[in-house]
Image 1: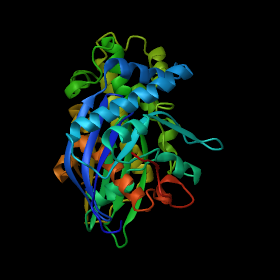
Image 2: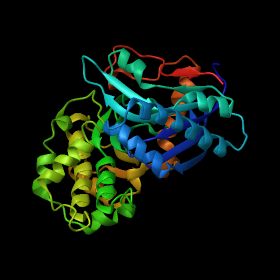
Image 3: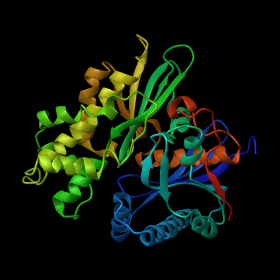
Length: 381
């Protein structure tokens, strides 16, 4: 399959459980281009069931049913977006409901049965990407690194691609000096805590802080923020990855116990403080764990994922970067030709392509794996 161009659909639903994004990509061995992107919101009842699974509140029957129902939903979304077009494969990330990379018993679990997609679309599905890296001693994350290098790196430039999904992760591509150096890891929370807080504040009527309105109307509680920024994960050196188990229901429950009046103003101060936590935790990770750009060379931060559409979060990141990375230009993925909703699914289209070619999908130096692995499991049509 060496030089052939594959048309592959990448499918992604993130930690925030807000919807499914699909990206139809043209993938060659060394390059990836976008044809189109489409999205569908998760039906509220399905999202509620997935939240129950992620919290550990679901029975084995409910987990099994959710796995297959979500697979059928993915299949419908992919088929509707393709409108009868043929593709070479589908790359399915699945819905992460558990991710615990700590040794000696690492584990990860993504829901969404791929056989339903393969049957409906008539193309092979590559899924379950994280476990091969874990079995080689890695964290199973982050896995978008090679895609970020292909899509966003630039000669003589220091680039940090900061994804703002439910959980934040960064890929730093340092080409400001001879010999490109790549470093990638999870930075901590992005949208997940803010989205959970909005659901709490509105009784489930709203699922995210649209246009950052609540956060921008609130005031940051610097005392609480300072305490949150002492979280040990932020200072842990990479390779590292995290999820809702660390920055999810348990974290927010502790916040609410210590701050019982947090929702009295509609959650505005809480949202402002959580947005500042995401922004400053990212900057802290950059200061502690990323190499400095070479003097006189361009440095840029590319924001991707749903959080890049939150003005309050973006403003907080820009402000935090003025201290962490003076002179860096903060941009968003659309500035580089990649729509916000395309970046994460395109990464898994790219990983599916590498699976078809028998090429490794992980960078051991970023995940902690002992060697490079072909990632994913193939489900034939």
